[in-house]
Length: 165
Image (cartoon, rainbow, N blue to C red):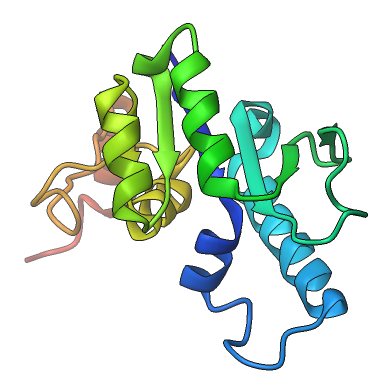
């Protein structure tokens, strides 16, 4: 079963360094959210449909119904993101396929308690970086030997077989 991701949005944004720690305004928050959505879309492509992000929304204008962005990522705003994440994990029918992304220990502990896989933001970013790339085993990098067909060997022997060593 392919993993699904439930992300503590501003937690990940801060971990990625997309947002200043002081003097943040609404325009900066929107810009940081868009940067995150763009990053996720580039990293996951069509698999973005398996990603849901919850952002804190302290203003009533953002406390709206959930919506799907143009990038295919499901975005929600909540008065307190951590509370909604907890409710979503608890209500999930298949928590074993759900990965909850947050650096908040309470959020990750609640995820684990309900059968989901807790991930720190760094662990998630590592997964995002390797998404869609073939896995490599330790020691393979630089040690891999290309496979050469018999036809290629014959070609090169005919081409350079008369060169003295």
